[in-house]
Amino acid sequence: MGVPETHPRKESLRIRHLLIGGFRRGLVAEAGLIAHGRGEAYDYLIGEKTHSAAEAAMKAAAALLQSTDSAISVNGNTAALCPKEIVSLAEATDSRLEVNLFYRSDEREKLIRDELLSAGARKVYGVGVDEKTVPGLDSERAKTDEAILDADTVLVMLEDGDRTEKLVEMGKKVIAIDLNPMSRTAQKAHISVVDNVVRALPKLTEYARAKVESKDYDNTRVLADMEKIIRGGL
Ligand code: PTJ
Image (tube, rainbow, N blue to C red):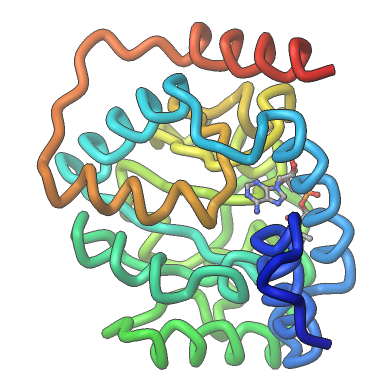
């Protein structure tokens, strides 16, 4: 069904339809549709725009991704919403790409890898991995590959708190993009970009290309500012 150009919620519906299309093609898990709904609710509360606290987090994230050995973790939702933007950020920051799924299946792994390759990725890790794991994690998210295992910095998006916690315990710097500043992922990450991945990835790439610097970044403050915005919105 087409959305009229004049529809007041056109952009939100466009994003929603990208996800539905991704679900129909097998990229997105059933639960991914529900996770998106939760994200939409938070996005609505922050006014569906990028706030200065998120910009500060993005500048810090772009600088860290560029200055360290880095990997970007890709799941079904992000592959359906912004494959090209993920590949552009990986190129701008020289980061490796790894498929990492909560609802892991051989078929979804391959579909997501192929989506990234079609979007221009040169190499995609994390497909067919069975032996390497993130220690202490019981879910399928534990399965990992050298892209993330060897990285000093990992960017995660729509992530579970468990893995964020374990990656931090492994000594990695974790950057999260998550619309909920109160989620365990946002709370545990070193840098939390509270924004929609659809808006955040192009901005992050722009900052990385501009080689922005970031001094005295304070994630606790950023999270508090974003929570204040949400409470104000309520
Ligand atoms: O593809 P898989 O198998 O790895 O499954 C992925 C899902 C998304 C199903 C899984 O990671 C999941 O259940 O995620 P959660 O626990 O629901 O967490 C999703 C978080 O991301 C929530 O805090 C949402 O508010 C947030 N979120 C949802 N959509 C977006 C978002 N954050 C940024 N941008 C979005 N578009």
